Image (cartoon, rainbow, N blue to C red; front, side, top):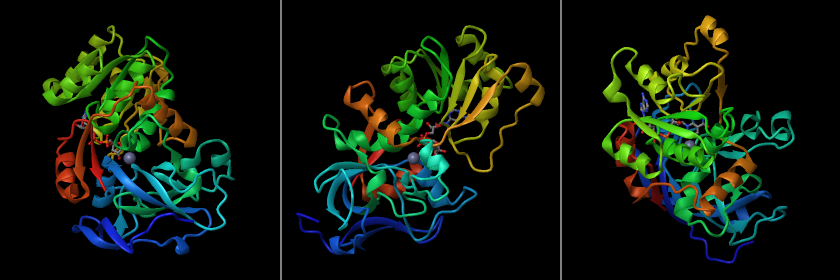
Length: 358
Ligand code: NAD
Ligand code: ZN
């Protein structure tokens, strides 16, 4: 099923091996409507966010490497231009849809039936185990596409599809109530700046940790209660003392770690107040959480891993954007700019999210 002319080739960002050259292939093959299987759609991607996960994928620095060659990307916002024959779906040609990290799962196993689709043993991951959204036309699985509601621009929807849904879920898992203190570590980055806004919308008192004036200003514009520049508190125990001080002397009720560096995890275990929750989100390679058993028990701490969100979490996360409660800070560039975007991201030089026009 298709109403429009589908080109035979289009632009895509491809690498053949981790750490190898990243090229913008202007003649990447586009799947034709007749080639789509039941359950598949061809999505014309309009905008795609660049998540730090895409950088990890290219560097191959996680324990499970991505498929190669790979078209990365998993924050795609676009429209369906063709649907595989025999598909049973709510979507139509023309529907606005989002491509997120979880490209597909079985929907029948214990994890899927319990709403924990990301941990399905048959999960397929956009821009990791299957080609993702760094291209003009992407083949996607209909059952995991997210409907993009009216009232949210495509470039705004894009970063919500990974960064937004991930931090929304993480805050829901933080065991906090309105008025509680929450630390967002990595607060000026793609995930972090959205976490600050979701947490504020939830009535939490937010302390953002990151570095640099751009990020400080960005967070102040969201009404975050306090910004702590980690580079200004680098001596032993200094950051921990400062976090405790700004959180009523006892430390925060929760810490959501969205930083891609390892140090933030172990600091959090020291500054959390008793019964506090550490929500692990950022995925630094080769990192370990060193939880002292005695103090974990003595302070009754909780350590929770939080991995993206399910289909309903994605719908909820977008709804905050529709209502204007969450506004991603966007810098809009082009697919061609991917190399320089990765260089900046590696250095921590992106405040908010970079979204690429496809
Ligand atoms: P980003 O590069 O946009 O942001 C990371 C931020 O962390 C930067 O602003 C950087 O300055 C800051 N930072 C670095 N070291 C810090 C420290 N010691 N203390 C405080 N802040 C520090 O990255 P992103 O796209 O927001 O992704 C962040 C991480 O989250 C990545 O590892 C990514 O793979 C991971 N991630 C996890 C999930 C999940 O489901 N758990 C989903 C998406 C992304
Ligand atoms: Zn992501």
